[in-house]
Image (cartoon, rainbow, N blue to C red; front, top):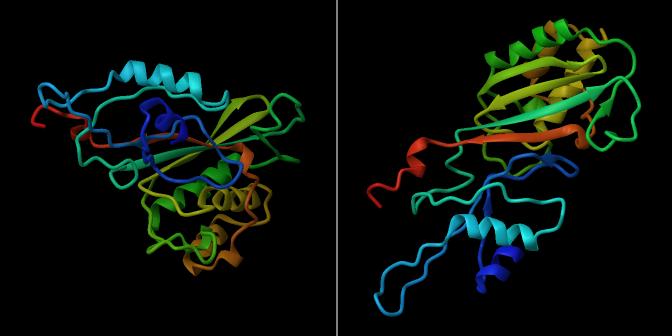
Length: 231
């Protein structure tokens, strides 16, 4: 917001697609801002050069934040409320490495990923995920529709859990991963994982995993938000 206000030389409010837990990364985040300026002579709208805005912002922003793309959307588009799905990835590794310690969670011992995937598939059968939500939040509902949840192997020492849903509760992904690790270690059965969801009690779920290994990787929107033919 500060960089955009500096570049446009006016106060600009930036609205993000959502917020992430402390320490969580975003390899992709979406935000919107409103801008209106008239040509003094013709009274026509002045359109910003999207490529120029992206380039100028990247010159102002700190090195750990970059703007991939700026584009025009419909006037009523909203980065948060119009999102139809979000995707997160959580990375675990079995080895210590100084190069990825800020982006991976180290796990010890062997894990049964097949059993963890069996448990993950039960998420499709439910919509109330109170058991995986941070307590005392301002969320009006704990209902979410999970459409993808799967562990896949990246390399010999790294696995990633990918989950997609229409919305996520605070701490939800980290709590799900922590509980799935209990399944992978043999400390909880698949039926036990299902009961955790059904009890709608955060105390029944596993410990939340650290935030540094979690990445927001995608936010999806209806195509019509980018259709400006009748605006």
